[in-house]
Image (tube, rainbow over all chains, first blue to last red; front, side, top):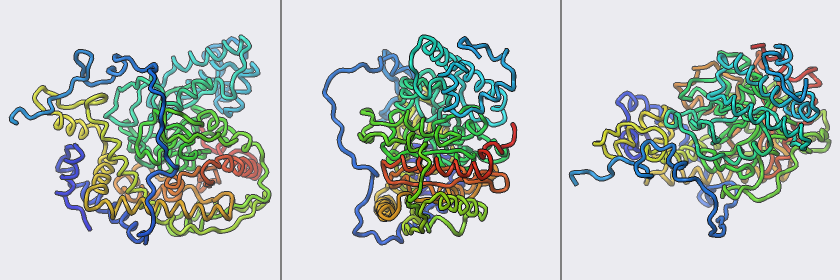
Length: 98
Length: 510
């Protein structure tokens, strides 16, 4: 086992988080220590055991398709970092060179 | 005191202190009897916050105006003859992970600094319907990840018993506010012990209800299959009143379970546990447990025997794997849940200069907005869920979760409740474990099994170790939350009688 500095940088990219060199230096050994502590789950012989995702049985929840009072557009947009014309304004999502 | 409240300036300091020391039940009874107004009770709490919170730092936001308006409404309706609920006019501190209109919701994070939710969490709308007075929002580890409240972006909260020590976490602000007499009640949330561990180290009663028993609508998700909101209070009876006020099915939460709320208030008052079968969990003892914690626990168990309970030892062999399973499951769910903090629809946005693309803005915002523990867990969860590691980590942890549920089920065929210490140690000094995540995680050793299996659990003050409170944990099967209150009510009464007063009476003056 073991988690390298490069792997941490890759995982940070997958998580859409910039990380500084200092953070990578700190995170790699910490994650290594955490992983070696949690790897003990592998000791449990559980080949025939079904996994549990939730402690209570879940059933799909349905409701009649009836309009109900909800947030106004202004309320929904009130916490947005930027808005324009009654919508969320977001940075460009396509690379101009593509 | 009169129906028409006098402003605090004309109330003596001694009277104010007396009011803040009342239990929630006594406060509500005094208000209902017209001996105290809700405005007086609320102003006394606000005055106490003004006096001690610069030291304790439990509150991130105090809504004095909103609290006094809610209190005035209670007083007016009482004067008009309206019959009020059992917590009407009682002040409460709300963990800042639950949304409430008119107040900020930060989750202890920079990424939500200044954000106001446009809706009430179901817990909050039920509190408002019960005429509970919301004093404001209290501190927590960022997104409820931590055991010390040191992971808050807004600075740590201090333990009222010893202000150089941690108040526990992640609901450390909730526990400190109640222990410092800033509020008789608080709402916390518990994903791996985040209500019970702070309750234990602050000398309080704290309950994690059965998963699905209290709505998670408006509870900002950390680990959705484990998160559960619940009460913190100074007495078992107060915790029961708050539990009853917030519990019950909610169509807005698809994991809310449609079963009747257990009769927790009635159970808290029964005080008779003769013949009740109590199992001491063999695996939650030994190496790493402070001898003082063990001694206080053993004395509390002897008291249960003296009260007529049948105490036996029970083995739950997979509990030793609960902590590693939790630290795979919770970070995995966290890495998915916290993807919503993407700088697009709410919260912080960094680097949007008209040139940078969305992914770059996202990455820079999450870098600036998340603290170290949140980053650690997002990266750990991303790793545990990645292709090639999924089966070995997340998949295996989910199987361990099944085995832990089976351990509980087997134990509950023999006994009615299980008991253990709540935490392996009393409160540790601030700063002692901030650079050692694995050591910090051990704080939740005893509390995690109930989160993984979904059952309810309570921490109750067991005694003091070198002047610091420690707790006994009581665990019950899913939807048998009333058993916690039955055992807790009887044990609390007996322990208070042994020492001649409530444990919190020994807390140093602030």
